[in-house]
Picture 1 (tube, rainbow, N blue to C red):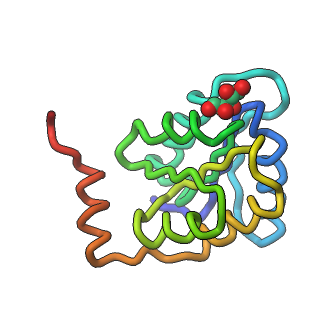
Picture 2 (picture 1 turned 60 degrees about the vertical axis):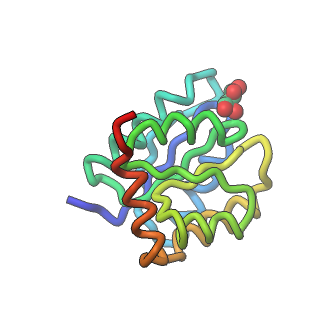
Amino acid sequence: MTSAAIAVASDHAGFPLKSDLAEFLRDKGFEVVDLGTDGSESVDYPDFAFEMARALKDGRVARGVLVCGTGLGISIAANRYPWVRAALCHDVTTARLCREHNDANVIALGGRLIGVELARDCVETFLATEFGGDRHARRVGKMTNPPEL
Ligand code: RB5
C-alpha cells in the first residue's frame, strides 16, 4: 500500500533542522512519520537512512526528508537501495530539478550548512513538483535496474 505520508529522519547533526521541518510539514497539513533520531546524542547516519529506505519499501510513506550535517552521508547511505532516489539539495532549483528530471523520492539536506528558511522552501518545492516523465523516465528506469557489472 502506498501512503501519501512523508517520512523525516536525521542523525544528531540534522536533528534541529529535521524537527523544524517535521513541524513545518504538519502545519501544512501533511501526515509526517518521524523515523528519528530523537535528540542530540551522537548516532550513525546510515541507520536512519536505512529506516527511510524501509519506510519507502513498505509503502508507509511516499516521500522522505533526510538530514545530516552535510546531507552527504545520509543520502549516500539511502541510495544504496535501488528504490531510493535521494537528492542532496542546496537550493530551490535543485529541489525542483531533482523531481522534474530524476523523480527523486527523498530530499536530503545539510543541517549544518543550509538555513531554515531555505530548507523549508526546498522541501516545499520538492513536494510540489511533478516528475517530467518522457525521456527522464527512461533514464530513471535505468537507475532502478542497473546492469550487472
Ligand atoms: C556527523 O558528525 C556528520 O559526519 C554527519 O552528520 C554527516 O555530515 C555525514 O555525512
